[in-house]
Image 1 (cartoon, rainbow, N blue to C red):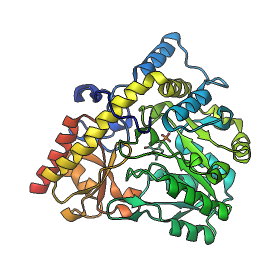
Image 2 (image 1 turned 90 degrees about the vertical axis):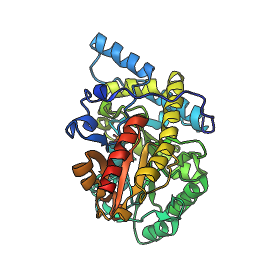
Image 3 (image 1 turned 90 degrees about the horizontal axis):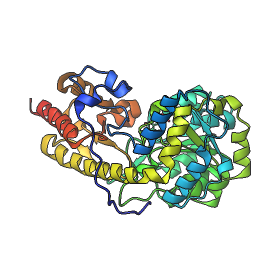
Amino acid sequence: MNDTPLQAPPLQAPPLELLRQRSSTKWRTYPDDVLPLFVAELDFALAPAITDVLTQAVARGDTGYTPPDPGIRTAFSAYARRHWDWEVTPERVRSTADVMMGVVELLRATITPGDRVVITPPVYPPFADCILEAGGVVERVPLVDTGDGWELDLLGVEAAFAGGARAMLLCNPHNPTGTVHSRETLAALADIAAGFGATVISDEIHAPLTHPGARFTPYLASSPVAARTGYAVTSASKTYNLAGLKCAVMVTAAAETNAVVQAMPAEVEWRTGLFGALANVAAFAPESDEWLLSLRAALDENRRLLAGLLAEHVPGARYRIPDAGFLAWVDLSALGWGDNPAAKILREARVALHYGPAFGAEGAGYVRINFGCSPEVLREAVERVGALVRA
Ligand SMILES: Cc1ncc(COP(=O)(O)O)c(C=O)c1O
């Protein structure tokens, strides 16, 4: 499906009155006069197969522990083949509560406390926290701004490994820039890491939302070296808006790396939520592919709509349309609103955006905008910022 043209009609988000009845972080952090476009939750209704499986489970009172094999391994393997031509052996898939927990457990299993672990800021803020939680030390190798996009600084990563860093957390596709790393880049990274015996853990949670014109390569499928040495962690939680249900998968492609995952304590898998597992299986099933196409059609429209809205209302903004996901990384430094423009925007425009500096020093002057909402909400948010620009 990587190259499938978008044939489905764009999903429509429910009206704001209904969304404000939700009880999740996005809707319960700020008062009702604030438009929330910060945390990465989607405003769209769930895929019908997910609604069905969860509704039936509630009706049955089916809220106990997750069984040993809820079907997630085979469901993910079939999904990987269908969407990315990636052959995943079900026995090399193990579930846990969420992607960041998978990352922490993989770090615990592969580094020694005190080891340095590379991240590539600006990057999803919990990456640094997870390294600390696993006893590691954060080593920053910022993405390179190429002028029309961002890419990994492979020479910088090599220097970090040569200097003793033992692992790297890869964000593939990258949050917040929406960068989809090329197969060549990933294969080169695998060679570099293998040369130093360092571990690469690839977070691929945004992969199903790769937009037309870009092509997602699973890290483990980028080269035989990556397959032999790497780890991937992913979940349906972002694309299908299931973050509160707690289920993610750790994936390996070789006996040695699989042995590392299988050697983790049973508790790691036991933390998988039953509703998370049921919902992930339904998300990965072919019957949810039509919904995914409709979601991608809506996001594809919104990522381009945002460019027009910013040009019209916030002319100083610098925005590159992301190749994946529903997050926009927008440079507002030209407005002179300081390192953290989202603070002023929240206070004075009543729009909640994610704070740029939370993603690293490279985020000074930036905001991250969640465009996983209706075009109307996106328009209203940008118009509110525009009014502040004019004020
Ligand atoms: C790159 C990345 N990884 C992980 C997560 C969180 O995933 P989980 O809730 O499964 O830990 C997010 C959430 O936005 C993310 O953007």
